[in-house]
Image 1 (tube, rainbow over the protein chains, first blue to last red):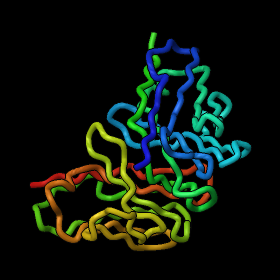
Image 2: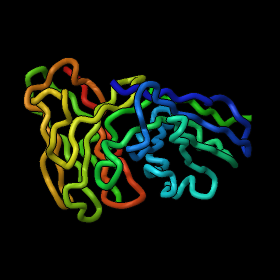
Image 3: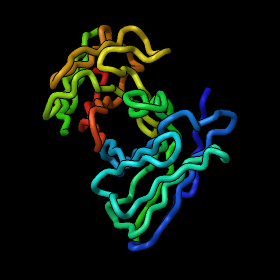
Image 4: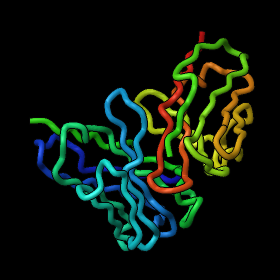
Length: 123
Length: 106
C-alpha cells in the first residue's frame, strides 16, 4: 500500500512563502508522475501542478504559474511545492497525488493521494 | 478544457440506479477519470480511461463515454456511496476537474 505523507502546511501572511513536502516511505516514487491538487474550504478540487519522472518537465495551473514551483528529489523519494507571493485565495488543503505511471496518460490519473496539508493565508 | 457535471447534487434510495454526467467543452477522446471523495478524506480513484474500473473498486460503479459526453453509473446505490464525485480530464494542460456531484442517501 502506497502512503503519501504531506508536511509543511500552516498559517502564512499574504505575500509570504511556504514549502510543502510529500514523502512516500517504503515506496519508490521515481517512476511516476506526481501532481499537487488543492481544495479550498467547502469547494471542489483544483489541479495545481505536475512534474515528470526526472523532474525536468513541469506544468502549472494558470492561477499559480510564476508563483509556485514543483520539484522532486528522487534520491530522497520526496516531492516539493514551493509557494511564494501567497494570496488569500491560495488558502486550501493541498494534496500530493501519485500518477498511475510515468508517462501520458497514466501520469495524469491519480491512484494514490496524501492526507492533505492545510495552508491558510491570512494576516 | 472545462468540465460541466450534472446534477450538482442528488438524493436517491439504497438500491437505486444513479447516473452522473460530465460534459467537456471540447473533445477529449477517452481521457477522463472519476473520483469519489468523502467528507474530510482525500479523493479516491474509481474509473480511468473513461470506462476502466480501478482495482478494488466495487463493480456497481461503471463509466462510459468518449469525446465530450461521459457518465458515471452506480448500478445499485449503497449507503457507503454517499460522497461527492468528480470527473477529471487528462487530455491536455491544464488538467481540470468538474464541479462535483454530491450524492446523498434518502
